[in-house]
Length: 316
Ligand SMILES: Nc1ncnc2c1ncn2[C@@H]1O[C@H](COP(=O)(O)OP(=O)(O)OP(=O)(O)O)[C@@H](O)[C@H]1O
Image (tube, rainbow, N blue to C red; front, side, top):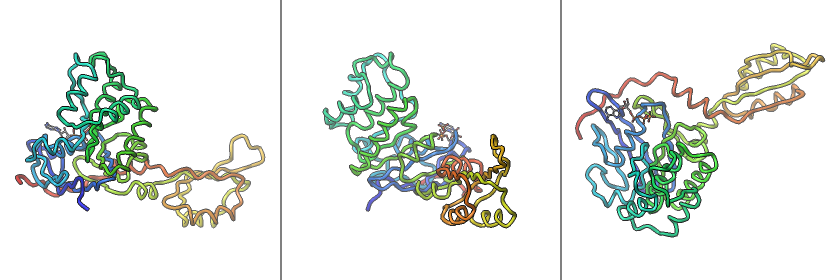
């Protein structure tokens, strides 16, 4: 199957500063890849390279089988792009702008455009200059989605949107995916990537520090565990729990329990399968095993040392 998007050792230098260093990544049709990373990680640079707005210093981006730097408007029409900073003519109404973008990226199915406007709650009769940040963002999303492009490139798509509209956006992403469209989105919001993407790419200082299925990253993420017991753990019991992957962080008397209950708090790495029978044997009064904390897993990647640069290549 041909990938909708294929980055191979993609590198971008601004002067001597390496904004992106040998990043390789693929996005098959009908899938959603979320790229996440701290400020300045290279997310926007990657998107601008995919759009052919800037030229790579090394490596390549292949977008729907073409080189975006050399391709013309025909390729552009097959992509829906939401830039991080929308620059729109403030005197035009939303409807005028959608007409205008439709002429460039069309053909546009008018009924689908109206559906998007309605689902995102956009008032297209208002002049852009009078719209709030979130309402401008809705306009940007409608123009990116309305021609049902084969590839969607969305830079921080939910920025400024209220939670209900965010939810609608995630539903639209799921529908796009089900219809075979490929989606490449950037986000600072880990939960958005968790709920919207199949695959996550973590960028840091221009390096791809992790590329994994969201489900795999989630399985590896730590979970908080809390046991409430009527006796403290013996050293042998603590060792057994440790061997099952539970790092015990605290063990203290439970507040508000005069009968001497003890609360054990710990962090579990990996699956709880080995832990559960041990916990059952301890017969605790209460057990809480939290959902895996993807945010902790990703923030951990932000903090790790960046690999030694592979050596950015100039020229093509
Ligand atoms: N036109 C430019 N000239 C020089 N340096 C640039 C330019 N654009 C980006 N950079 C630098 O490239 C690096 C990557 O920037 P980029 O905007 O791609 O990051 P980002 O991940 O999108 O960050 P943010 O989350 O803050 O939007 C940064 O160090 C940035 O300062």
